[in-house]
Image (cartoon, rainbow, N blue to C red; front, side, top):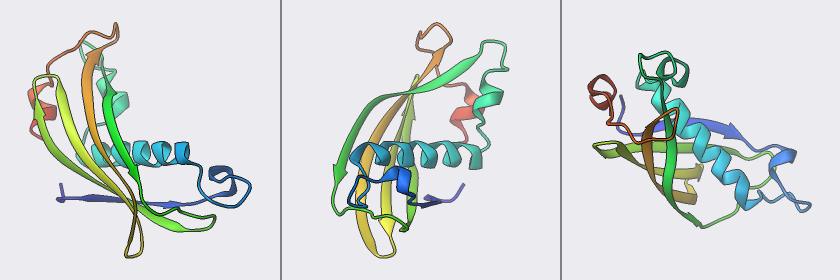
Length: 131
């Protein structure tokens, strides 16, 4: 997997407020898409996680976000995602959203691996090695 995974996103009207500026909560969706696509590029598919002997899911446990410059309607942005570590039942990512050469937002994410009852589970070795 490349050091940073890049996922392009176009800003649509539904992502913005009345002035054409991206509403702050929309960035959380963009970060989620970036994480999901980075996992997929690493060979970790949510649907396959549910088909394991013990079905597993990932959930964001902690996220620190900084908004720097607003994105606007019709912008083409890039969500850049990098896996930065893993231990036991958790893994960590650093994410940034860019418009060309301008950093718009960044997030530090801690995600947890859980079973379908919400109990923490160690990251399986086959998944851990992909990070």
